[in-house]
Amino acid sequence: MTPQIPGSLTQRMPVADGVSLSAAVLGSGPAVVLLHGFPQTHLMWRLVAPALATDHTVICPDLRGYGDSDAPAADGPETYSARTMAADVVALARELGHERFALVGHDRGALVAIRAGLDHPDVVTHLGSLDVLPTLDSWDILHGLQAAVAWHLYLMAQPPGLPEAMITATADQFFGSFLDAWGAGGLFPDDVRAEYLRASRERVPSIVADYRASAGIDVDHDRADRDAGRRLTMPVAVLQQDWGSALGFDAAALWGAWAPDLVHRTASAGHFMAEQDPALVVGTIRDLLTR
Image 1: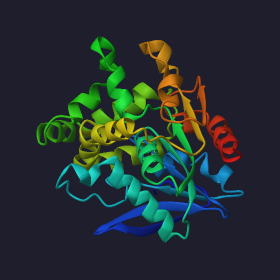
Image 2: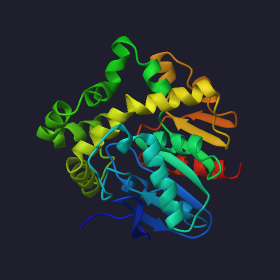
Image 3: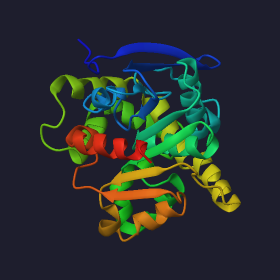
């Protein structure tokens, strides 16, 4: 049986022409949308969402091209741009009756959340990011040997064809390597790990297209915003590992350039912090929502 977020109801909503998103929805009250990372699905919020649902409507979608959401063929860079995926999230919330909402993302989902905050400042009331830098900054800080920690970014940035073939041929090993390298031993129950691998294995072309967009069109969009002086106008909370000390950059300063109303914290929890330290993540989100 496929694992579920306790107390949730799965809903499927149209968000664009020919594209629907699958989302777990629970609770009632002001809306909080939680966006998953790689190589995961909405299920990564199973230890966080029920705690927030005591006084909020919590919406946990599978992003376009991931999990049980639709995965249209990439007919250009826009298909899986963060801008397109952010518009999906805004449309999903609207279909569920929420014109404004707080938005929290992890990893890939955080990049979509950042783009939603920049593109839809009147819709996103609060923004939370777990363990990433904005796309443009991520590429700027990867130099020399330290770039090896993000080798998969370079693989999936290559032109269509070879990355998809290589990953498909070793899908469980490829996706499982990130669950092992970034997680702690025994972090994922067997059924959850199996679900992450199944979902990723079935979505190789769209996952690669998402990453390829991050090496192209998403950078262009970020650079245009930076050049225009556009910033995140809502309260922003960032929780991440101390990659700055490890790789030699000031993460809080990089984030501060985008978010004037910022609370930035480093954490000892690993990359999959919503599963490794859910109490910390719930507390961070609740603190954000009071600002």
